[in-house]
Length: 114
Image (cartoon, rainbow, N blue to C red; front, side, top):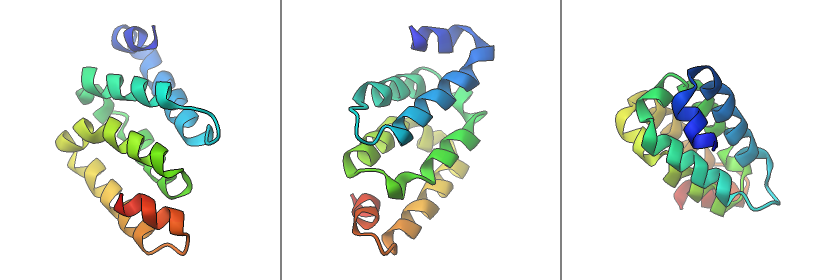
């Protein structure tokens, strides 16, 4: 339902994307595979639309070093098609991963190299 709403209603796209990314970032203990799956479907169905909301996606990248490894891997797989068309988003992700590689937290380093 949310995917179809995202495709049809331009005014709700920003809110849907923001809520999905917030759920992925904040629901650390809960299973979030359905949110990651929805994000992946959104990216596949409308990658050019997401370029206009790139700031929300790059903001989510800033939280990668605080997320569990399986969440990071799922999130990166979900946005991978978007990284192929948006150089600025790819550059932002590379910067975040580079910073995480040198983090004092071992989980952040694992996420950066996984």
